[in-house]
Length: 383
Image 1 (cartoon, one colour):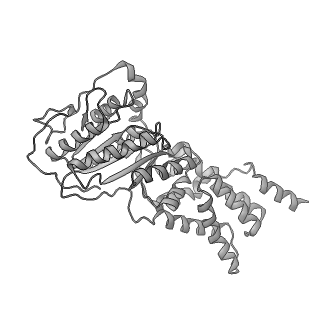
Image 2 (image 1 turned 135 degrees about the vertical axis):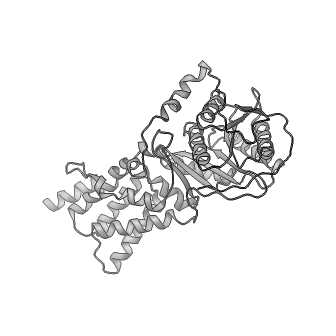
């Protein structure tokens, strides 16, 4: 799945602390990290402890709320009239916006159907869905990058910087991503550069223990840039294929915290001028349009090369994935479809769109409440 080339050899170790492995064994040893159980952060780690026990899920089950929240309501509009007209197109556009695909994206999708109607074509439910599916797939495929592809490096480890606001599941996502990479036979090192949150380092160490990879951490109150500098140096010296850096959660509208990202990037470049090679933003799919705003702000400060959408299984706002791709053209790399350790899945545009329109799972309830506009139109026809 992944491909990396080895780092440069024969450099000496200095300051970083590596959880679970000493200097003599880090180079080739995949032994499990020592986990320091601190009672003050047990509650913060509880979710991660139970996450590994979850059932393996897929994108189809994760999109059930989005599918029922909007796409199953398509049938309501067509229950009032067999073919679309301008009035029902307006209704469809409102439904798309309600699914958080965004106003611009909704307009693009509806205009595709509108053009077909202008050509004299009768657009029924089946044809409408095919038009929307085709356009969505085009939007989601426009970056040309598959969800699980990373660039190969011949000048050292691939450095992947993970950013995001608080509460999106950033550190947990890193742990799951580390498992995917390691299971693919890639050597990996994690860097605990989130020095603001009390349990952040311990949480990442726990994931290192579970997955079987080393974690570089700094001293108490160490500056993130210092920890990152040490981690890049260690990754180079140990011939590690991939270094993943966990950064502190920060509000996208806080200038000082966002500026710190630039300091981290500069620290990385001291060792590797070409790094970071990838910058991935983790967003919570349940936040809808706010997630799009986050992506815009982070992309301005630290140009993004990928996005991971978490908690997709708990929201009816899965359409935000389409909005982000349409407006920013940043590839969606992975999606979180559940709490299990294996519930981080490579993103596929075709699988995503097929899951949204999975008629076998739509389960359109006959007593589902109609929207206000649909109710008005039905009353007009009945009168």
